[in-house]
Image (cartoon, rainbow, N blue to C red; front, top):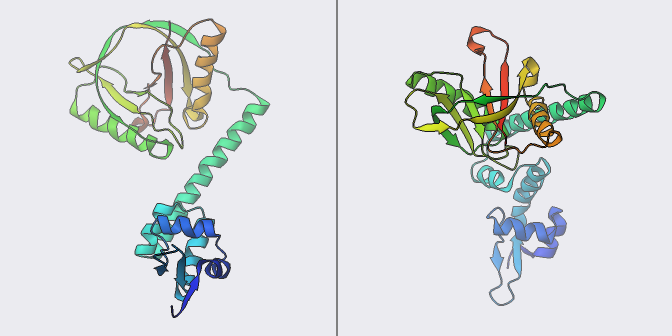
Length: 250
């Protein structure tokens, strides 16, 4: 076993735990150079220390195992730069959330909640499972494509059929009202509020949804179906953002 060392020595030299080495082996990141067929004991080459160090540092930087595997297969500075841009974007989002929460500690967002009856509305749509980082692009692109391909009869909207965050991915349905749409929003009563300007951005928009949900609870009403986000402004025309958050109630 020339140039081979047992897993314990390799763990000490690479400053990786035995558990980490077994995990990296299972994920195809750092397989041992030899596995004893009788005992199952793992042996590594000292030349693998460089790979081990790279993996350890990438994990320290928070890179997921799947991305590390892709990087180890074809290392490049471009991949590291792309991952750094992703981290910076995630950090910016987290700081936005923290600033929003600090503002909420000082003063709760003010949203006036009202109710109204809405008529049934035919529409066309596309549905996709997305998380927060992909949400805005999906909504914007889908509205543009549906708007161009149809004759809209009202404001575009998004239906949230499930939670959208870092772990949950909806699904999300983006729709445009049309006279001959193949889908239909039912008639009924909704509770709604209006968000404008910065209130329409994440995470501030969460306050609008919370306001409607809180109103329903305090008023003895039940939320009945998927909330919808209706867009009453045209960003291309320079208009200030104006969203209506409407939730069916009973």
